[in-house]
Amino acid sequence: MSSDISHDQHGAPITAPVLDWTSDYDIFDPQYINDPYGIWAELRQTCPMAHTDRWGGSWLPTRYADVYAIAHDIEKFPSGNGISVVPLVDPASDGDSVPGNTPSPVLTSGVPPISADPPLHTWTRRLILPTMSPARVADYEVFTRDLCHRLVDDVLESGTGDAASEYAQQIPVRVIGHILGVPEDMSATFTEWVRDVLEFAHDVERRRNGISNIIHYLRGAIEARQAEPQDDFITELLNSEHDGEPIGTPVVMGMCALLLIAGIDTTWSSIGSTMWHLAAHPDDRRRLVAEPNLMPTAIEEFLRVYAPVTMARRLTEDKQYEGRPMKAGERILMNFPAANRDPEVFPDADRVILDRQQNRHLAFGTGIHRCAGSNLARMELRVAIEEWLARIPEFELIDPAAVTWAGGQVRGPRSIPVRIS
Image 1 (cartoon, rainbow, N blue to C red):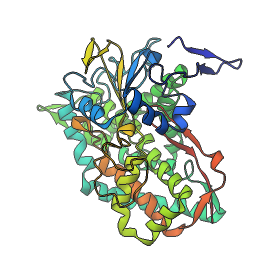
Image 2 (cartoon, helix red, strand yellow):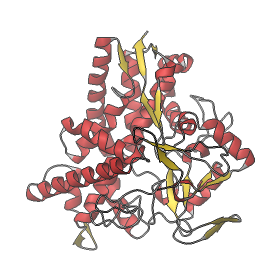
Image 3 (cartoon, helix red, strand yellow):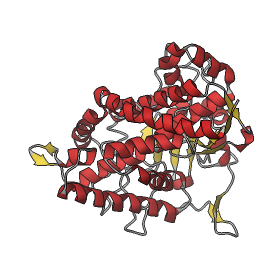
Image 4 (cartoon, rainbow, N blue to C red):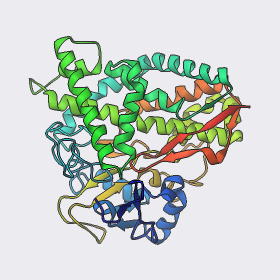
């Protein structure tokens, strides 16, 4: 791990504070997690491609044009070398390798298609798309709407609730579980595993356990479907072929792991950020209630302003980007959230404009790795907001200071205490 990490008297990891965001940034710094917007704005003016030696070294583009260009340059900046914003850990080793960085004994194919380059990327993405088609998502909407209705019931009964942990975080995990064909009572367990992998960069053991638990569960689920096929995504993959041959268990496991990890924290963060905005900005909330026809553009605007995901491209050899010397082993962070607030592309970029018409945001990435699950994520966000506002049009934060955020690879609120007003 990076030499700037030490531990307090209780053994908890701590890092040195950031003194210069242009040359020593840390996306896990509390200031960055709680309010990255001012940092991005300053960097765009002073150093639009910042660098740090932390976490093995990385670069942080903050302009739309740079993020877009790097995302599309898959020859110079491929995804097969690693997509994590920090070095991860292989659960089967004491080293610094994991799927998406270097091959793992248990996920030898990584988590395709997102961690793969063509040709593996091409045919694995093709396998996912039917499951995420508009027609299939319309079927999932029935399940999602019923789920949201039940969750709102609980808030109505008590008069207060946590719009993050008791609402936003309960939706994607159960929808993904429904698609994978796993019991709904596993949702809390899956939530913890995904958080272990994505949110606790400094805790090597916790990340290792999260990866190991996901792999162990998926191995058992795949073996169960091989013995007794079900009507679910795992069985669909096991029945799929590439070039006339079964796609193989390693690819099935990697694709299921991707659906579990990428389909849960990302979407609940988008839903949670939107819930926070509606609670904290009553004018926008009341306008959306009064003008439900604004929902399509409002959803895109919430996705733009509160884009949760930062991906990475890891270099295996020295490269140059516009004169900047990038070293082997470093990462280029695909800072989609900052790109979405670039005032050169989006007028009044830091404002939520519910009827914004020109909105080519990068919340779902861009290029060949654009999120294959964008239809599903949009549906979950829309249904979550529709069901809540239909029955709780007036609500507010109990204490703005009590709202907590997590960040790093995925940024979003983890606690939003609200009351019906």
